[in-house]
Image (cartoon, rainbow, N blue to C red; front, side, top):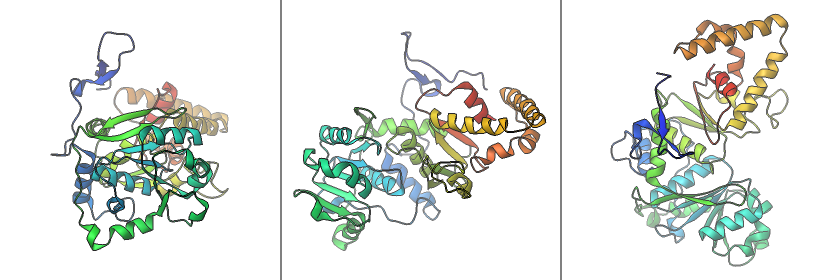
Length: 373
């Protein structure tokens, strides 16, 4: 099975993109009847797993009473957190194209993205509003409504012409009887779901619901037994396609999602107090997504621990590593090696990770081999 052809180029031209052979001539469709847009995936998850743990207990935000109309563009400039996903699900349900901007972007890049997309509504955090946008608001041409988290903000410090709301006031507005019955405006598969801006001088990539459904299907097809017993740790930027599609995939199948950050992920992370445990140790996830840079860091951490071993321990680790790698290439595992040699290595990510999803750029062979082990 490992030697089977999984993908092939779409043409004979050098550099041609590859596509999965299982969906070579058309976009993949998820095996949930009628689920051809992102809002329908959410409906499926709520109907099937509504009583199970997920992101928390907060209800979906209702933004419609603030004057939004179908296909109004909403921008989100925020760190990865539950509120990000809640806001995104609202946009999908009411057919508001969502403009995503990395929280690490500088002021000029954010202003460029907001102006080019002509977003009139912005969701952000008080920290980012204060540190990056406050001094640039007059350079933003279309944004008139700004939604922030529930931290205190002095609206008098901001120029006229901007309405600043916190999420609690939006929830209260949406819970009023005259507003709670507003029907959703369902998108079609060909409607635009996201305008995802890149890093650097950002470029907006327009992505339809059908594109995202295909990407989600490709992920879910490759994870055996995906379901409510799984726990996913989210720490990559939700403005990154890998993280966004991963979270929607796992939410659809009833998995729990715990939010973290690259600075608090492991016991050795820079923002973890000495003697305290990292998020992976506490959450014990079964699923993770990672870009090669993060996985290379994990590889270096493991190898540094190996170098601290004495000669006999290092030799045993090398023998066990080579043996298990050979077994995996044959389609088998090495349970005894897992128990005796790799238990501490596995504990670096909480001890329960059964599958990792890597994307963004190519993964180095040595890192992939260690991740497989």
